[in-house]
Amino acid sequence: MTNLKEDIRSDVREHYAKRASSTSPCCSGNKFYQPDTLLNLPADISDFSLGCGDPITRAELISGETVLDLGSGGGLDCFLAAKQVGESGHVIGVDMTPEMLERAQSSAKKLGLTNVEFRKGYLEELPVEDDSVDVVISNCVINLSPDKPKLFAEVFRTLKPGGRISVSDIVAKGQIPERLRNDKDSWSACVSGALSMDDYLSGLQDAGFEDIQITTKDPGAKPVSEISDDSLFSAWISARKPQEI
Ligand SMILES: C[S@@+](CC[C@H](N)C(=O)[O-])C[C@H]1O[C@@H](n2cnc3c(N)ncnc32)[C@H](O)[C@@H]1O
Image (cartoon, rainbow, N blue to C red; front, side, top):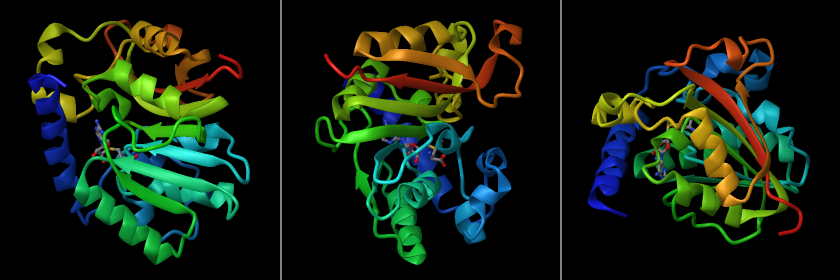
């Protein structure tokens, strides 16, 4: 990693360390879930989301699957995934921010979940074995990575052949203006690091993925063709690692 990339990660970590200790319902995330999805979760867990969509419902998880959540934050998506994959399944959340990991671990204990674990690590160097994961999910995190080609290569490495991704993320319809791209504060706010649709597509293709789809996050939302070229939007991205390589 170059110094610039390290600096970005360290600014992002500092930003999210502060968010982890927030006790107020924070964020934008929980409005994206169907209310019944969040039933039976204590408010301090269901309200703590920093996401921009619902990667879980679209992932169509199956009992017994192994799920990896990139940038698991307070753990909400991991807890929802854990319920869906059941005791025979397994969920791994990876995050680089110790304060987020502590919060997620304490919530998992409170919920009595035994099929979820949280690992400290970078998305560009995932602490996960090769070919071991059925589904990679992520909620508003990939835009924060300073090295997307490395991240996509790592996701590809950890997925089993035929494994899939279901990701919510901020995407730029066109290119982000140069002045915004270099603005550190806007990076942590999920703006400066957003990939354009074309770069997302080619990044995933270069890593080896197939069946790539980038759409607006809900089926009822405005289609991508109606979004203006200079806008950012909340997208749902899916793709598959080929069965045979
Ligand atoms: C916007 S928050 C989203 C958290 C969670 N997915 C959610 O929906 O609430 C981004 C999270 O990703 C983590 N993160 C950002 N960049 C990372 C990187 N390069 N490696 C590991 N974790 C990262 C941050 O620490 C933070 O917890």
